[in-house]
Every structure is written in structure tokens, then in C-alpha cells.
Image (tube, rainbow, N blue to C red; front, side, top):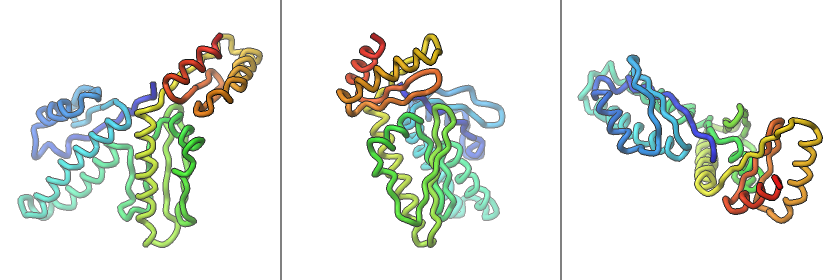
Length: 238
């Protein structure tokens, strides 16, 4: 099972238009795959779930924020409140989806499960192919890898950054829904044990070409089709 995203939402931006408790209940009904913490006095609430479910929640909240912004434009709010609303909407985008938009599309950030990221890099490397004006970098922190996509060329190429971001995000969602992960823990934590597991994996790998083996200091992650990784890990452990 792949790791979940834990995100903290700042719902205080809605407090002038909604009863926050009622809005949270509406969100819970629409997002049954997510787990919610208690609503804090400052309007913050923690949410945990899969990447696709978090993305759907982001889209729902952005729609809410957009409707508020449109009301401002129609004059239903005072003109001096409009810049504040736009700032609130931008902050909501960042906090609900772990996604950063530079405003002009020059920078995008995608948060991925680390093993999904490795699988994409190994089997779907074309997902990360970009032109000379776009640069992709990454930072891994345990089970989470943050991918940074940046435009270093002309501003007219800024749209390419968004296209790359969407391509990576869409591919990761597809893989998240079809792949599974098994983790083989080292029991003895000795060099000999690690070598035995490594040898077993290398010998089995030709028979399972679509399985990805990711070694770590304390364990080995095996990523792939559910049926294949079940067979693979069973043979490795035996």
C-alpha cells in the first residue's frame, strides 16, 4: 500500500461566508476516502488520504474559492477586500494540494510517493522529458518526493511548465491506482542478509520485468502489479 498525503487546510478563509463546521461536514460527505482531524480554533484542519483523493478535495475547495472571488468581482464584497480574497485563494491552493504556482506559470511543484516516483523514472521516463527551457529537480524526504518544475527560458514558454506538471501528475495517479508495494524488512541487519536478499532479487528480476526493486538500508521495496509482486516477494522470502 502506498503512503498517504497528510495536509493541513486553512479553512479560516471561508469563515466570513460559511459556517466552518457545516462546510467541513459537506467536505466529509464528498470526500469519504479521506480522514479528517478536528477543526482547530484557528480554522486549521488536518486531512489524510491518497494523492488522487487529495487532488479531488483541492479541486472542490478551489471551486468554492473561485465562486467567492467571482462574487467579489460582481461587487458583492467591498473593493478593498478583493486583493485579500485573491491572496487567500492562492494560499488555499498551496496548502490543500502541496502545489505551488508561481503566478505566471514559471514554477510548479508536484508531491509524489517516493516509490511511485522511482517507478515512473524507471518505466515511464518519457514523462520527465522536457525541452531545454524547462528544468526538473527533486527532493526526497522518506516516503515523499517533491518534484520541482521550473522555466528558465522565455516567459512565453511558461505554459510548458504547467503541461509537464499535469503530465507527471496524471501519470502518477494512474500508477497509484494500479500498482502495489510490498516491503521486505531485514531481520538480522547484517551485510550477509542484505546480500542474500539482493542476490535473490537479482535472480528473480528477469522473470518479472515490470517489477521495480528499490533497496534501502533497512528494507527492500518491491513495486509492481499486485499479482506479480505477491509472487516475487514470496519467492524472495523463501
